[in-house]
Length: 119
Image (cartoon, rainbow, N blue to C red; front, side):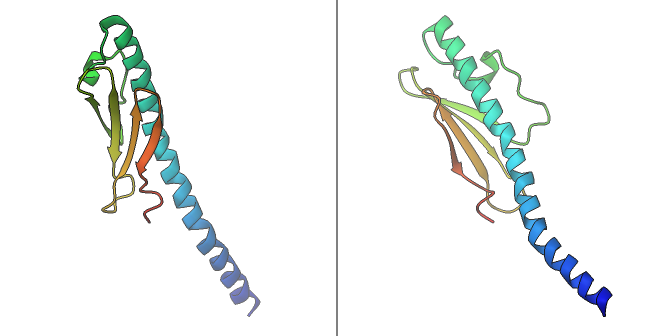
């Protein structure tokens, strides 16, 4: 009987701890997007200084995006070439919802679609 009570207590604790653990793992995956988008912003600032407009292509920037990146990255320029929005998109947990981050020319980093909270 005591063993059964102990097993029930362990099961309840595990049931509470596991979802929190999963959420922390997903949040750690989001760190990639934030780090790479900040690198894109710095690269765009350097490109603007040299060329008087932002780069239309991420390959034109002197940054390294990891080859095994979980997110896909893109950049869109404003009509005058003086503004941009860089986007990181991924499905970090295998459900239908995507996780999306954006950074703009003013260094505003925003999680536009949060897949961690969509669960």
